[in-house]
Length: 353
Ligand code: ATP
Ligand code: MG
Image (tube, rainbow, N blue to C red; front, side, top):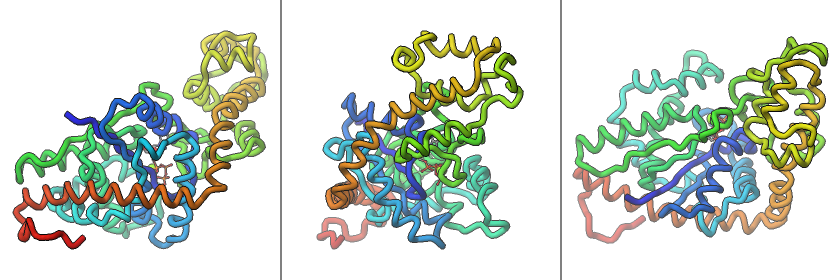
């Protein structure tokens, strides 16, 4: 079976450290391993509009920001097709057909949707478009026949819902669509990185992020303000490393090399944790170390970003070419879907698209 990889991000803000450890880092690894037939990365503007429809400028401005973030972490347009969701109208068409296969109560039960509804200010008037976004996400995935979806664990219910829709479609109309599987980071600290405020998830919408484009000063301020263990009042007090955001970030990012370079009195994270838990290790030392580790990660990303920021036309061309290529692929799947649904009335005639 072909191995087709697809992931997307919403243009609702710049990409952050949570994206990096939860998904972006994996994508670059997959790209470099080269063990795939096709790989797609897309900017989900249609989806972003479902809860930002009153703020189209925000979505538009962030298209280029997310594209710059992609290129600066090392996503290579020679190997990966990068496209903009709304440039592929076939995705809306597929969404329409899949909507018949899902009940309203199933959408309302989707745990990610439920959690996001709590955060948003829809009160009792939930836009249909928002509730519908898991279906539109299924269209994104299936249009490219993608079977490997690198995501953070907040997206697992979405992939589950996509699998249900695929099975239902294939049952009714015959084997047509490919069932996707999520690819979650094997490091449990990476699959849902908390925010700097200690909240369950670093998220653009919650404003608790360290952004990939943040400069050194901003990163320093954010790290120094981070939530640690509220009971670790004096240096000599024993500390908790488990619910401590600073340690969780280290779990997600640190290597033994970092210790050699920046904190040679410890060999590895276990030694540092043991000392903190025993007492006698102050927050400031750990935070300074985390700052060095984050800087080590972000420095090359910032450098690359500078190059693309000075060549924005090149970035727009990458998006334009990628969208064109992706559309051809989506048309191909839509034709299969229409044939299976017996709505391919004039097949064989020249396609006017
Ligand atoms: P928004 O607040 O607009 O929903 P977001 O920060 O949740 O933005 P998305 O664009 O929704 O970002 O997510 C893109 C991808 O990044 C998804 O696969 C998601 O699971 C992953 N991701 C987002 N936040 C985190 C995080 N804190 N830790 C790990 N993965 C994450
Ligand atoms: Mg999200």
